[in-house]
Image (tube, rainbow, N blue to C red):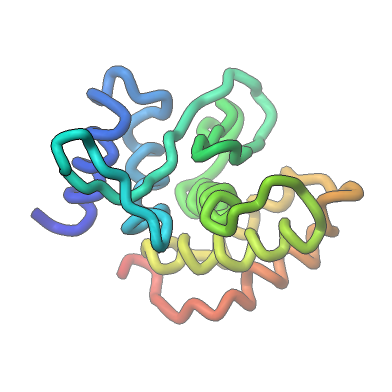
Length: 168
């Protein structure tokens, strides 16, 4: 079994059969690829002693806006995100939200958003997605007191340091 199939199997075990998965299968696969081997320094144990990586649970909200969020190990996306984003853009959004969880962010600040942009870009890139193409995601996001300007966020993503080529 290759790495992607293994991660998909783990995700299915954690989230139940595909018909019960909140995200459509293609988007679930992208999110699992970006999540990689799971939250660093975290292992989930079953009663029988079976060990699993700590992976977030992915959910879908019916809003048509393009958005995502991370709360208590649950990563949510809007229907607008899966309907309007390309695979590269969705991978960058998934990476950003997964990064919030991996980094233990409990609140939002400009610094936390930029840290999640940087790590999220690395996660998406390592999963084989094109961060430069994915950075078009930021056209949907609006700066506010917690979210930096688009240009600042694009620069943070593009300077993430990932050297993997798309498709690797």
